[in-house]
Amino acid sequence: MESSNRKGSGVVQIRDVLRGSAYPDVCSESFIPLSWESCRNWILRQFPAHSGPFTQAEIDEAPRIILLGHSTGGWAMLKVARDLRDKGIPVELTVQLDSVGITDYTVPRNVKRSAIFHARDFLMLLTTKNIRMEDPQQTKLVANIVVKNASHLSITCDPRVKNLVLSTVVGIREDIAKFSRKPFVSASTP
Image 1 (cartoon, one colour):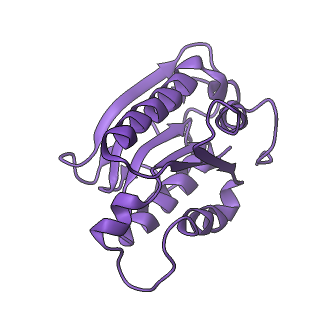
Image 2 (cartoon, helix red, strand yellow):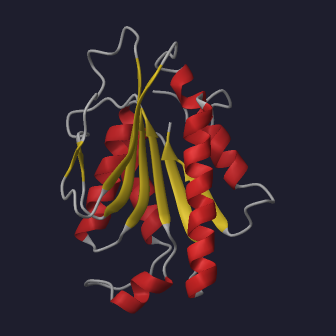
């Protein structure tokens, strides 16, 4: 269980890039996996505060969400995505990095795109190798990559992870510009 601020973590490095001046329209935060509820609550604070389901207008005006999780953070990130699904909130992208957990193999239907990266090291028997989509019509698997020569910790620094997240941010910005929508939030669990 690493801290949510370990500078050697690629997840934290991506968070820090998204906090930089090139991304003034992005809110980015990281959480330890055991505090997945804090992550969910942080995201929900970006939405209107009321009971009941969100209207389509509220969803259209709400921030776009990207979730990134490493190790048990992969499990925590999908738990957050499932809670958001239950509130009718869409997730643009989930990324699992050498994910470890019992319930981290099914990506909920509110996720538009999902990716999983695996390392081949001593933990490979514990990590999730195959994920399934709750609804393949709603969720597209955009990457299922075995990262050669990566360890459980070093996998977070694979440049393809950063490129996937940042290219998704760029794509969302383009959509926002077309449809005049609000910016988005990014949460990660190293």
